Length: 169
Ligand SMILES: [Fe+2]
Image 1: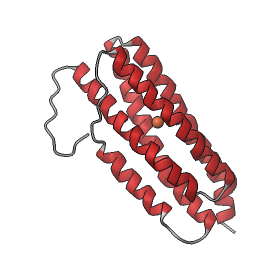
Image 2: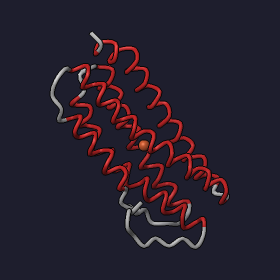
Image 3: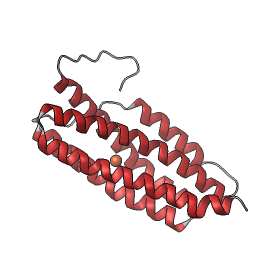
Image 4: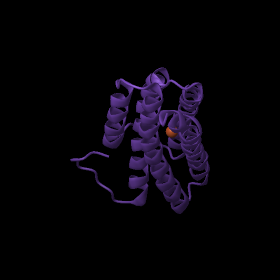
């Protein structure tokens, strides 16, 4: 969403499309960021989690493309200022120095903020799709939502079972 802009919403459909455009922009930015997160990760499981989520994220863009087609809209990106900020924080973790396990914990902290943004965005968009009667869009958004949630859970598991445990020693 633009911080200062001139969005105009005359219908829930307008708002729904803008929400999709925001997510479309966010996903493209995440695709650029994840290889750097993976490269910076020390623990093998964390690297794998980032790599797997990169593949999933490409699928999220494909799903959004399908949704735009479903509702007869051309896919467009609405600059996602929040994702720019979240990924800038991620860059700080990528560029950080110090203990590898603590740095992994820092990468996870940044990545989970990204996931929670997406969980909020997809949850909202799915509710709107439901309300608007876009059944296929609702289904596709739900699929991506579940993948974002499971990524978040996996990152928590990695943090709790490996990274934070090692970082304490
Ligand atoms: Fe995603």
